[in-house]
Amino acid sequence: MPGSNTHITQIAQALVAKHAAVMVGAGFSRNADKKYSTNREFLDWKKLSDLFYDKLYEDGAGPGKLYASSLGLAEQVERLMGRPVLEEILHQAVPDEDYIPSELFRKLMELPWRDVFTTNYDTLLERTADQITKRRYNVVVCKEDLAGSNDASRIVKLHGSFPSSRPFIITEEDYRTYPEKFAPMVNTVQQAFLENVFCMIGFSGEDPNFIARRIVICAAEDVGLADPQALILANAAAQAAHMVGFPEARIILSEAACYVALAPKSNSAYVAIDAAISDVRHKDCGQVPDHLKDSHYSGASKLGHGKAYKYAHNYPNGYVKQQYLPTPLVDATYYKGIKRGTEEQLLHDWEKRCKN
Image (cartoon, rainbow, N blue to C red; front, side, top):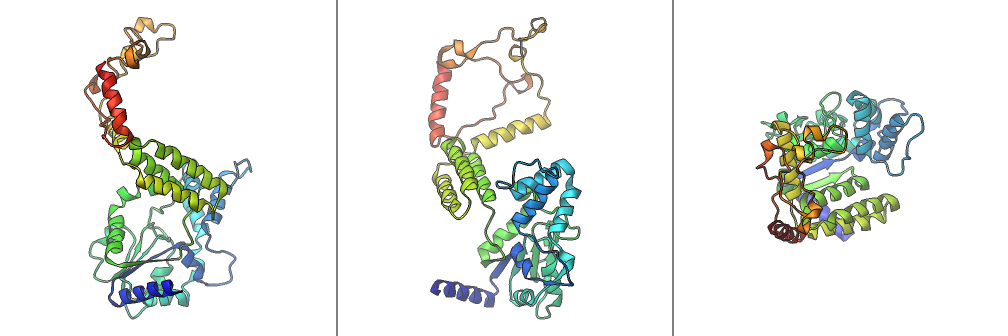
């Protein structure tokens, strides 16, 4: 196809100019050669999900595999059985020691890539690099390895590396906290993306559950109160995508992604909850004011619970001024609204209600 030839030409030119980088996905590992006769194989995401699910529901009483999320299942395994059990399953799914690099690996690594990134845990790329005499690769398995590594092309292991370069990024929490915990790795990929023709190989398509979750998170974190409808739509899209599956799920996810992208943005709710959590973690927050404490039990009145409580619905506009926060936090303000989209009207209504 003419379009494909154009892309290949661009990649070839970038390789000659030493401005090409590649991201190698799990699918590429399936091109490795068996070291000896073995029934073990590199598992895809679906089969890995099955391993997690079967471990969680060995009694057969599970809810069913149709809607299972690999990252969510991995998090359940870690929470219920511990990280060592989770990592043992990963070793089952990635039989690194049973395979050796094939000729296709050597051809890939002989190309003059500026950097080779991978989310794979196996060591096939590193072992291939050891066989290459035309060029040298520095292997980066953790953020500390980045310093001084750019004097040669690099193999950057983004999600950990067997046998023991941890953590192996696999749970929802791992992915959620990755940008903060491994910021140097993220910055390295972003820089490579900006400075090079960036290629991807060995990716068969992302788990639709993961894509849907990211859209839902973006709707809450980045759109927020500027358009609360975005979260409702994103959640509905996630459920619909689970129900119908690919290929039609692509249409649903596209609609949700476009809506969230076009919607006005506000992170006020996100900032507010993090500020409140920070106070809870780092300050003596005191007690709930006595007048807000439960008074519906014997002896509550003797403790002063509920005394002088003002019931908001008995006042104009359903709002009344009284102390709501504990005394040490009485002057704290967590929510700082942004006058954008729907949130601007919400703020206007709130300010009007407080004045009356």
